[in-house]
Length: 181
Image 1 (cartoon, helix red, strand yellow):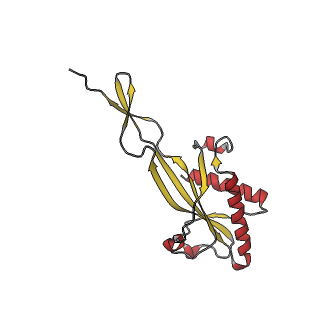
Image 2 (tube, one colour):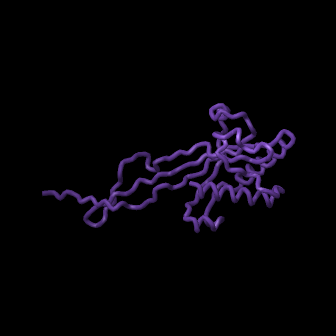
């Protein structure tokens, strides 16, 4: 999971430095919601946090599937897919609030044009054995800030996925069919 977040943040950071005149790192990946008072309030930055993680069974059920292998069958592992919700929050002082909103809009523009992350675009994904994935803007729930018990800040909520957790591999379990007698 970390490697997917890392790739997204590196690509956004490259874009912000080259296209949005950001000379320093502005993305801060933080356990923000649990340490709200500990974030460096002197530094203006975009705080990135995992808002939610969903794991879904690709087949919609946990029923094992059997694949014929000669005279026997093998059990097919049910693929699981994970979706990560990343929350980008503008944590800028009042005097720099417009700069924070400008950077959020740069992030939104970049991710609007780059919704599909693939190993063809990003060779590092091949080295790290990562599957292709999408990142899409989610509707921001007005009640999200109260649920997280933090004050409102300009923000964006994105969903990354699907990230395959279990491959389409076969287990070592061999099921021998009962022969008709």
